Length: 433
Ligand code: AMP
Ligand code: GLY
Image (tube, rainbow, N blue to C red; front, side, top):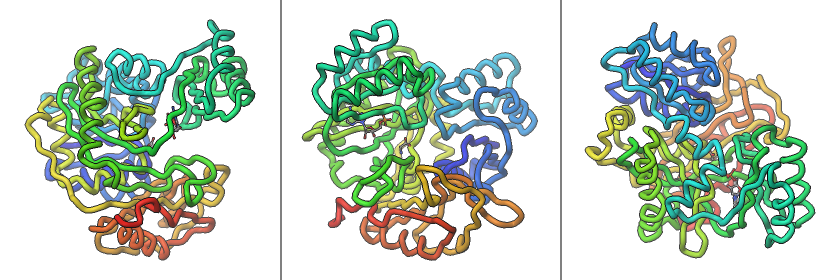
């Protein structure tokens, strides 16, 4: 079948790498893709957010049967619903499988923190206690924050490119941020509603499910490393590395995650008739021995995908077909029991300002059991150059987490670009694993 994959990061390279291995995949197109995705398909320069008409024409002329969506923007903007309506208006043909992802309404689980909080309340899913405020009840919010225990967490309701969460350690800072969001549009319309919530202290992990709206498969869990500096210090980034499995996520803990969080979420989607045929990302925190939801995302994580997908032995395209046909109950997932580690190499200056277009050398390097995923890269005039903050992700599979880390580092040592930086301590909390 012909498949269109949306996105351009390390996540999309990992998805393209895996889909390309499927005998069900004939033509793979990636919009817009990166220098790595073009090894497994054809990169196409299509707008993927807001205006889906060009994408629709492309799908009709190339006989696309399935669209797989990497990032959240197209999903929150309703790409699923757009293509459902387009198919009703003029059929894409009998073999059309549709968009792998949630409907625009269900994508609000990521697109609106307040929506997600209300959903969790309705379904008794453990999460931090909270209240939501807007300009309508500004003064009440001011009082609420002033009397809140510290630290206090403020979240812009809408999508804010990962920057919309403020953890304030004093009341003045919290009130200033509150004022900036609601009165000065610090995050634009995304911050016109603010969720104020209790700070939860614990260790985070990412859990993923693939659902067809009724059934689900639990994918390998992962932990990402968000801070730029070693020992989890410095500024937040999109993610500097990830590991899977997560040593503390043992069977007893994962059973709590499934019983208290995953099942009630999928059941909640079904009861509320929210159409959802795609990945659910549960951003969790372990407080004591209990899991709480920090956030939902309606897509896979990046860089978590670069460790989760290599640990899947099952055919990914076949899983998507079962998702589309609502037959995930007929599938048993096969997983690689080894540990996967990915280390992300970033541009100098990231997550602040950085240069683009810097030449990268050493990309032909290979090691068995390692995979070099591209993130922010671009092919130009026969050369591969940097094209983003996160540039590459090197994943290694091994029986031992620490051996996998060493091998990914060894491969990265052979790659160079001016300003290149990566964390050498991914997985540092688990020296025995
Ligand atoms: P989010 O954008 O919702 O993923 O939040 C970004 C990060 O802020 C999370 O990964 C957590 O590290 C942190 N965070 C968010 N909410 C809370 C909370 N209620 N308690 C503690 N940390 C939080
Ligand atoms: N790694 C976190 C995310 O993809 O949102």
